Length: 202
Image (cartoon, rainbow, N blue to C red; front, side, top):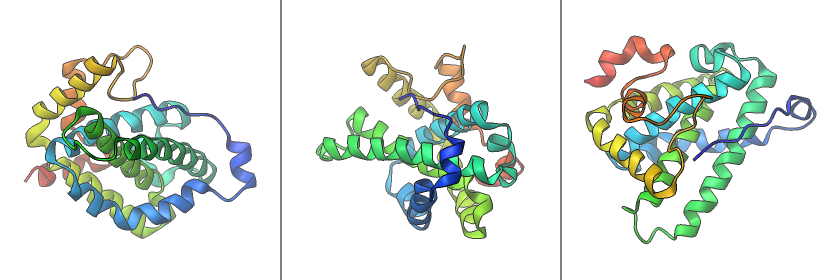
């Protein structure tokens, strides 16, 4: 599932951000949403979240993946709008499955992608309010606690990629979704949370 970004900073300055509006709705429910999915889906979401941060940082700057509290306001608006558009597409895809087989790999992928997109949204928007920053910290902590099933998560990601002939995570140019790369994504936290890594593993 490749995320598509478009530079649109000029338009972002001229209108109310749909991404920020969506964030206000998403943030209060995110922790419960993460808790509603399986451990494998949470760990897969960790991998996708990490990959998505790297992808966004390649477009809009290192602060996104390393220092989200320092992201410029215009950049926050642009990134949140792109993520909101992606989430809307994912939500539509999930709704079309009707939830009849929650263990189907496509349904699982929709869920881990939706979780990951929301986690990155609150991370990018962390500087907008203390509440968003707290939710982001809690969300990454919950994802980190699923790392004991990292190998199962990698297998699920690879299964999705094999069936649908698509990368299960957003990729930087030249990167391939190898088993070792997916495992690294599924077992690590972004730099701003790495200081709490040991605590999150307990």
